[in-house]
Length: 71
Image (cartoon, rainbow, N blue to C red):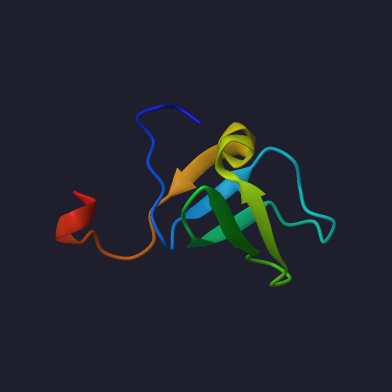
């Protein structure tokens, strides 16, 4: 992940490798030292250290309208 790329709750990220169900898009549902994300295809939840998750991200798509704190 690029240093200028920030993650926010509700963002959809595309990972480099597909999940076992075939999907590679995940919704960020928890932020912190670890990231919790839900597979958009099957609903499976994973928790992974932030540094490792950052290396797996290919693209990020913000979810919903931008609020004041996300600008």
